[in-house]
Length: 243
Image (cartoon, rainbow, N blue to C red; front, side, top):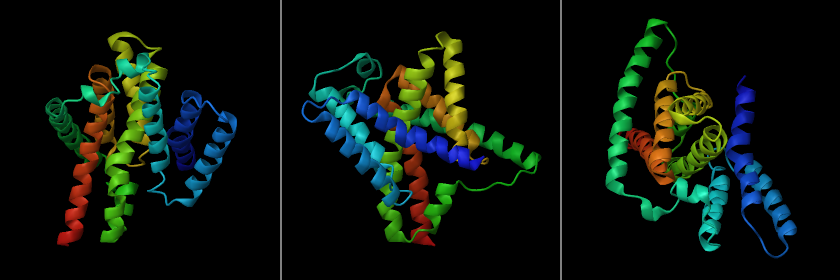
């Protein structure tokens, strides 16, 4: 089961952005040759980079996609609908959404924790948290951009924009369609983190971000995700420094 989950992660977070990049970014000269070079370099680096560092690959592709939309002035319907322009981002409003998300995380997380205790289900850390906890301080500091910046951008682009917005939401309309689409995305998003104890919190973040990206745009969902990852990272960092 975990093998299937890992294959799903590879497809969603690494293959899908590559395919979208190749289909989206227009190259005027030697396009086929450049795309072949990109594919070879991308695959090679995926196997060469450590596990926690290889999300820089889809991150770079996503930045190229967004830059291409701006430079080529090809601001399509999705660019406008999901407000990919940073000019539309307001930090005050983003912080309000963060507070709301954390309120739901605390309530749902507590309820989920009590359920796990009731059914005597072992409470374990997320795999990535365990890995980061075992890193020395220098290695941990190196991973911060990968966990706090790159991961939120990649995961919001793939799960909330491509999977939720372009694939599911285009098929399921209306308020009921939102619930169906957001639930499917959030169950998958929470499941691929392979942590029963964190399932409820991850589901809440994902579901809320589906609402945010549809109502306010891409960068608001990224900021919420970034903030959640950032808080966890700071807590781990302080535990390393103090302990």
